[in-house]
Length: 267
Image 1 (spheres, rainbow, N blue to C red):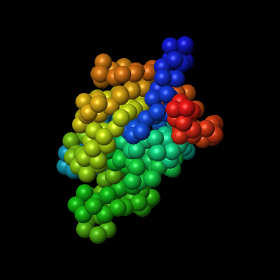
Image 2 (image 1 turned 180 degrees about the vertical axis):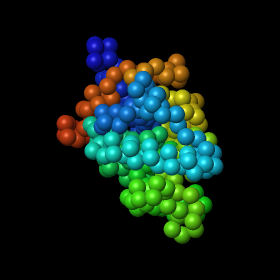
Image 3 (image 1 turned 60 degrees about the vertical axis):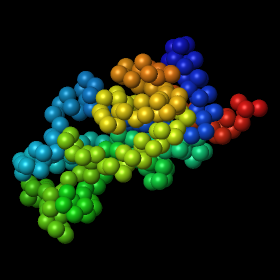
Image 4 (image 1 turned 90 degrees about the vertical axis):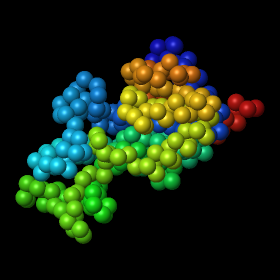
């Protein structure tokens, strides 16, 4: 980071240390340091494969086979992914009571694996570590689906109702989980600090959450490698590596809690 970035990073850390109710909103940029590619950048997932829309998945056995083929290829490529320093730092801030809720667009399960409790985490776009039946909602484990897929070339039907099985993620054209969206909007409206980390802020309605917070009076900070359309509304914009930015809060690096930093600033 150059000097300007360092000063902005210090400003952000001060905002975090003095916040009473922050919300962290995270996107694919948070997980790239864990070896998980993002979607929109050159070389990202969508530059190689056009996403399969929900209607296409439901309406075509061929598209379902292709979706599951891609899913298992991606799982193999990211099997060793672990939470990075940015994930651990956010989990630490949740544990310290600084971040009230983490709202993520990511489907990689790394926030949960970093130690964030389920009641402090909203996965707006679902979770890619299991599947659900589109008819009855029953959870299915991916290993079971993969065994059938590799043996027959087709995914199995739901073992209870015979319905279509799909990775428990939100595809283009698929309805957002309304309960999760309401929880995220409520938290954004109640936050005093809204932190957007690693999101391009182009996928709506999720990308509207920073404006919900800003209009309710929160300080808005955006940290992303590339510019976003919401940068003009932000109080602080950073272009830096998220691991470098958040590492001071990583419990594997620093023993100082955010609560201690807050007390130091209030003394």
